[in-house]
Amino acid sequence: MATDFSSEIQHLRATFESIRAVTDPDALRGRIAELSEKASAPDLWDDPDAAQVVTSRLSHAQAELGRVERMGERIEDLAALVELGQEEEGADADAFLVDAEAELNAIRKDLGELEVRTLLAGEYDSREAVVTIRAGAGGVDAADFAEMLLRMYLRWAERHGYPTQVLDTSYAEEAGLKSVTFEVKAPYAFGTLSVEAGTHRLVRISPFDNQGRRQTSFAAVEVIPLIEQTDSIEIPENEIKVDVFRSSGPGGQSVNTTDSAVRMTHIPTGIVVSMQNEKSQIQNRAAALRVLQSRLLLVRQEEENAAKKALAGDVKASWGDQMRSYVLQPYQMVKDLRTEHESGNPSAVFDGEIDDFIDAGIRWRKEQESVPA
Image (cartoon, rainbow, N blue to C red; front, side):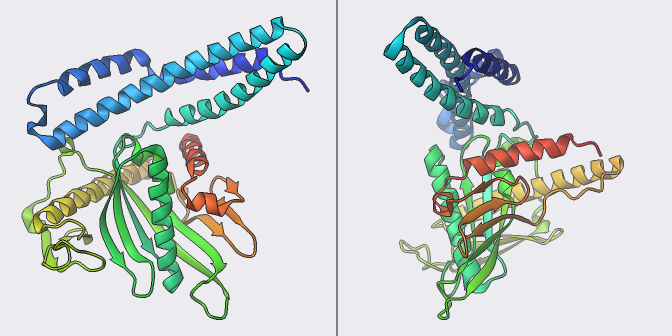
């Protein structure tokens, strides 16, 4: 059946206009002008942290505007290509329409991704992210699974050009990781990755079982927004307990030869943060405080949301504990249990190809938010 290009292009234009209305290119241009002025200030780098925030936000705003403008141009170029194809005859017409079909499919996919970005409108969605992965039930297989998930997220970030920094690593005795914490330093990293939070389940023939039995193991993923200077999360000194210790695991250059690692406990909540990947105790202490503040920020947000739900009489469960299964045996399948999205290629998923899962999760979350209490 021949493609109805007229109808398809009309649909693309309508979808694009709704995205354009939400994105508001004029407001983006104003923000770019404002950030460009700040970025050109001669004293910008007197405060490196503040400078990093300005340049990162400027880069993100420019990229966002570029994506929207290019999409509009691509849709109009597609319309022109179809028009040319319809004016031609024979083989030339077929060639034009084959190219138009390929571009139509590419635009559909990219427009869908752009539409998902407009759904990230939560209070902290625009933040960078701090991700913690912890091995759960399953012994050494769970520790190995935690390391597989770390690689998956780092490869995903690498594919997108997002800088990452591992802040703390706790190695398991036989193989893998007990836990790991890392930052994803990109705007909207929190809003994007927050749908990955929950319990992940792996089913496979255990490489650590000499009888070759099938093993089920679990790992928990926590995603929190990175604290910003404007958040005003002040923690009184008497509410923090700080312990120093020697770093463990692969080190070198004095990382694990001095008492540079820091364990910070927030006494009222019992939240514990450990940092050991920096060379100095001062650096680790600063990193630990930043992550502790970020976790307290999320706690505050959850308390506010719980209070709102209580007022509204909302007693629905939100995120299920077990949110995704990775099955390698007896068949090959990765399936998200909330969205029903699945892939028959676990190797690609573990290599960082998780955008479809993330997009489906963001859409699912938006649908859940719109369901009446």
